[in-house]
Image (tube, rainbow, N blue to C red; front, side, top):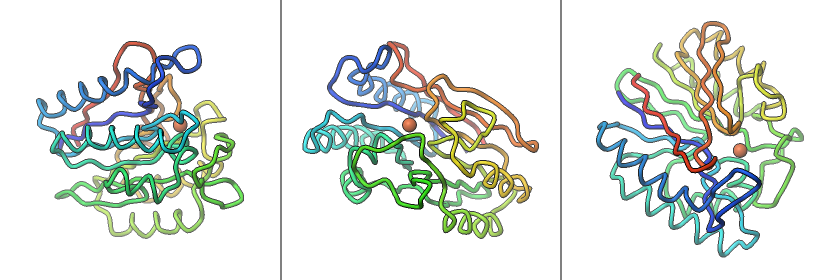
Length: 235
Ligand SMILES: [Fe+2]
């Protein structure tokens, strides 16, 4: 099974955001990624989050997400989406889901003998979900209801399980980008003995580590500079 991955397009109409992000170019970059995924005959596409970057106007943000939704569905490939902090600081989860009309994390799907689990760390440490208003992006955790759910899903999963998240579960990375309870979540993944890889976004430089024998891969952000960044994995 082949899975096409991309992360952090941060799409908006702006040419430049911060010093290095090119939000407007991400429309073309997503299109290019989808063309490659089709040529490589991937079975599934997963977006690892931060599809959009807010322009400070909810109607415009909804418009921008709608454009991306049309582009994504034009691939004809099943697509799953993990919302990122930028997505859910711009739009509430309900609107984000309705406009995108694609399955969102948290989610567990089985494809033959491969299990795909998407986590959602868009929660503040006090347990409140990100709700469409700007907030502190370093305040992130996976709530207990979801860690309990994860344990249960891993019990029923096979031994070819792959886990995906926007924020970092890999606690060896830059700490502001790591979820508060990353060590607990890692322990659950390692103890299951079933997880063959974890893929994340959010930290724009990317990176790779190993925890308890599981490779953790952080994708480079698509929005950075003029170069494109996406990845096809065979599982
Ligand atoms: Fe992010």
